[in-house]
Length: 334
Image (cartoon, rainbow, N blue to C red; front, side, top):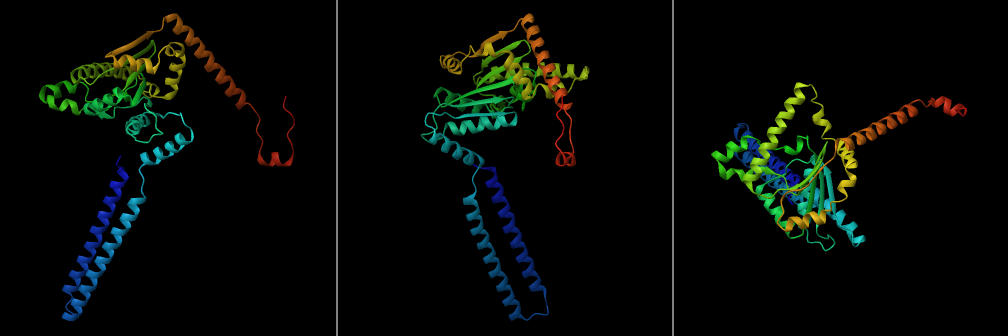
């Protein structure tokens, strides 16, 4: 994995070399234009400046080589730490997780880790991402699916159904026009990978989509249309803050707790076993009845009231200044 920081360092050193060369050229130009100098003095100064330019260039090259060799990408840094832990704990497996942008980074990290040749990294590597945006195009999706078939990696994407972040980046409905005008560019569009666990207010859906560009095009277009309808609904009823609410980890955790019993019936190994047999699309759809949702809502309200009561009880505790604490011990509070 090539670190972007290394490219940045190379860019900075290139700019520094260019700057030093420009300074030398300007100095030589001033020497040539100085009419007070004799020809011998002018040649001596020019030669001295050229020698100085060579020394600076050699110094920068040595510094760049030494500094570049000491730089380690974040992937290498984290992976080396993980391998050290795995080496000390035989039998442990590698799990990578992250939320939002962290989920996108977790996907890229797990794809690299799954190809790592260390004997201490047991396969498959497992990635669990939450509310992650898309990170790769159809070619990346095809490669990821081959790695899944070879048993190198497993991935589960957890998201709320009304969260808009996992739908990005995408051209949405414009992908239809793009496919009609430039069908060869469809494979360059972003797409999700792995198993999707979509949490909704009425239940959850577990699905797995393969790399069929046409199917992904239609599915993504339909999701985008629904997203625009929901966005209009939020704007019209002045509830735009709900967009951030559905992207939070707290709402994901609430729904995971609500569907904990149903989710326990599904195993990632069993799901990937079904996928390897050729099963695709919706793998499971669970709908919670209205009475069950009502009961879960009551439990949630009771939990909120309990937390508020604890907060009020804690905030009602008396406080003491530093002088009071140092001067005397406070009396026992009934």
